[in-house]
Image 1 (cartoon, rainbow over the protein chains, first blue to last red):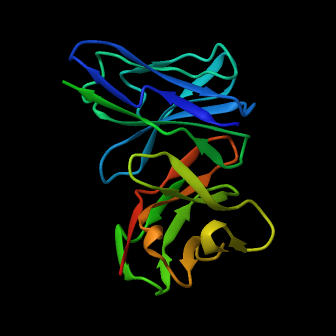
Image 2: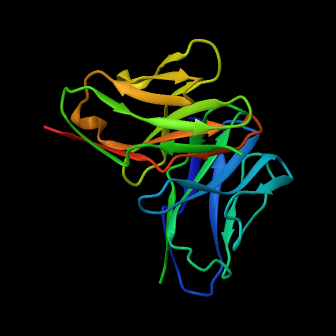
Length: 111
Length: 112
């Protein structure tokens, strides 16, 4: 079955640690996205990539980093510079200008 | 720049009643419009989309939306809701350059 997978579903991190969230898709989509969702709020764009080896900052990129070495993979690293990292993180992919397909999300909690 | 405003943060409705979730957008270029649904602790699923053509768009689960360019709106409707429609609904606009902007969401609660 085609789709997007995110792992892990739940992640706990101590303050000061970097952590990497995985996102893989087998839909052959060129574009991939990372969003952050906080309670009662919409989705805020962290980073997006429209092609391999290229990515752009979204609206809240500070404290985050990404890579796009393969078409299928778009991992997100939450660094210690992110002041308030506890949130629900969603990865998505799309064919340009069309709907986005979302993964099941990773809930990150900083202890 | 583009933006999306969902006019109602919460919409309570009784089962089998009609419902309308309102969405206004602003954009300086041609837009592509979407409605997504999110169930608790899950990702978003596409309900329907407007890319071009007919302004009345039909989606899954009996939902439909109408694109109104003059009023810059894309309201979501369903003539008769079910308990299972209880979820968070997001309106989104794409600028054609691969970037989408989402509204803050509307929580639809269907009561028996």
